[in-house]
Image (tube, one colour):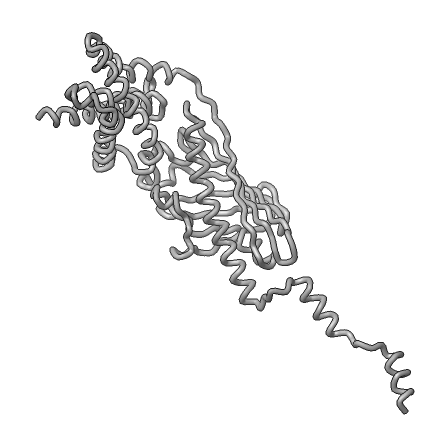
Amino acid sequence: MKYIKIILIPIIFAIGIRLIFGADIFDDFISVMSWTFFITTPAGIGALMIYFSPAEKVESLKYRIFYPWIPVFLVLAITMVLMIEGWACWLMILPLFLIFASIGGLTAGYFKLKNRKSENLNISILVLLPFLIGPIEHSINTNKQVFRTYTSIVINGEKETIWNNVTNVRAISNSEDNSQLTKILGFPRPVEATLDKNEIGGYREAKFEKGLIFHETVTEYKYLEFMKFKIKANTYEIPSTTLDRHILIGGQYFDMLDGTYELKKIDSDKYKLILYSNFSLNTTFNFYAGIWGKFIMKDIQNNILEIIKERSEKTFANNGSSPISGSVRKKIINLTNKPILSRQFRVAYSANWR
């Protein structure tokens, strides 16, 4: 029973904090999307576990650092089973939870071993800390911060073919999908993209699985060279089961702004395709969220670029490409179509042999 209490009380504390911080009635005071929740909740988990643990176990440094991870992983499992939190959010905040659970364990261990007189007071303050700091952080005005994700790839192929694969991405099969991080996070994979007209004002619809659609409007366009488009994901169109509400595109915290394709010539039949996009974050932890946002966007963009490369190079190969570059091939063809000797030289040459 003693050991059950060591694990159970930190779990009850963490789930209680999650439910309170996520309750709509407290939206004006506290929020799950805050440093307060990400730091004080795991710190409280670690501190409570050490507080209720026997002193002889707490003397072990390994125990104080790593054992608080046990209730953290149990909280993860429980909140996912009860659909309180999604896998994507947990994967992004788990490093913080593990680090601060260990810090909470080390802090509680220090007071337990060195200053037992104030142990009860210190653990009480730590448990109440989320409710003391939360409203203060929530009162801080947040500003939207824009982040850019830059990706590129080198493609061997014809310029027109590459550009056609950029503007209109036909249905993507599962075997073509090379995404990694987004697949782990359970994000919708790209399905197809269609552009109605190759000019400024053109409408491009980028479809993803689970009903996610990006409505894109071309704002700048230069045929075979450049295309910029603003992105709008209508939040009300996205099914509630597609994305966690904390990372909902077009929601309170995260939004896609625009994307740009650039095609630059490197050599004959060799081009560099560049794709970069801008997204915005509106949190008190934009720096940390921005790191994950860039990882996710790079994975999505690299996946699209790989698909365009594979399709363009396959078409190039099927059209009879060879190791000789296109410009050299054309020169050879032109040369072989010309007579080797001029007419005047041939006439003079044949007269000498008569």
